[in-house]
Each structure stands twice: as structure tokens, then as C-alpha cells.
Image (tube, rainbow, N blue to C red; front, side, top):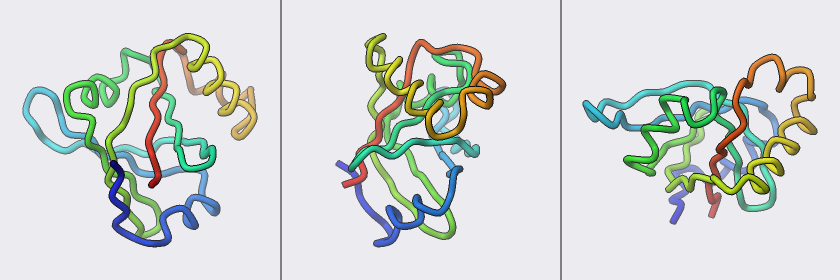
Length: 121
């Protein structure tokens, strides 16, 4: 269940293309943050690991699905859900191409075998 820590997180998403993702490391338990692109679809946010299932942050959330998302001073803590079904991964990739541009997605993303779903409520 998502816990909204700032009432305007969904509003902030409308004005940014990038959010900060924080996950807990699977080996040492240290928090690790990085900027990521996202796609919002209704009350769900979708993330696409740049190197698919080889991405370190993705491997970390398989161990601990509790993540924090932040943008413009607003935060959201939620439980991320890995998407491994090829059809749903393709749908997520298409959403990323539609929002960020097919050329940009091709330039930055190298493996499309997983995606991540984050509830916003």
C-alpha cells in the first residue's frame, strides 16, 4: 500500500519528466538513489530499468520492494511490483516511447525484459 507523504505528489508528476528513486541495497542495506524516467497511467506509475533485469536498482527492489520516489520537494513511499510478463513489459515500453520519444528510449535503454509498477494511492 502506498503512503503519500506529500499531498501534491501526483500534481508534481504533471510538471516533471524525471523523479528520484531510492531503494535499499540488497547486500549492505544502504539506501541508493538515482534519477529515473516514469510514465503515469491513472493511479499507477511505471518505471523501466535502463538495463532491464541487469539494473542494480531493479535487483535491489526484488529483495526489498519498499521504495521512495521524490520530485520537487514531494515524496511518496510505496511498494514496487516487478512486471515480468512480456506482454505487460512491451506495453510499458510503448508508454515510455509515447511519452519520452522512441529515439530517446532507444538511446538510453538497452534491455526490455522487465518493468516496475508503483501504486500511487
